[in-house]
Image (spheres, rainbow, N blue to C red):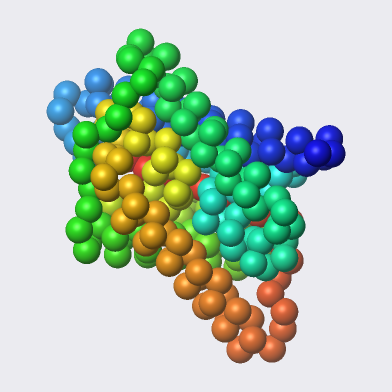
Length: 235
């Protein structure tokens, strides 16, 4: 493995870990301070995630593309922007980082490091919400001007926290990491598969729509300076 590849994988793993630490840690803090007001807790969780996501994309984008999200890596691989041989290593780095991020959040708040969420999330509405959230996220990534990707992705995720029934995970790695946190941001392992399938469907649909829009405009899709993303969210 080349040093450049190792650098990319480290960036993906570390970036995903920090993202999940932000999401889960801010959820724990928000729940403790909100006095049982779920809307207030979600607002605090949203603000922390938006800020953290923007910064992480800016920091790690030049190194790895700042995917932090298997759905993003899959689409970038299908577009030829990520070498097929790197797809699996990217996904593995993201999954490992997500789990480590959950454990780090627990360590900061002196919770049991190893735990599983008991928060069930499922049903048609939740699955549609995840497909919509991921569709929108990928469409923003694919259509945004390269210099504005970080800000537009962060803004979209902030909105999606509130307009989707699922609070917009939009990221299979986030689902994986949040399975290991029985906290405000958690998701029960039994609910994970439905979320991930919906997310992948939404991502592929976004790629198809992006190609249609580019063809209709009579020009190739815009080049992206930074391939980003990741979403995650509350609870």
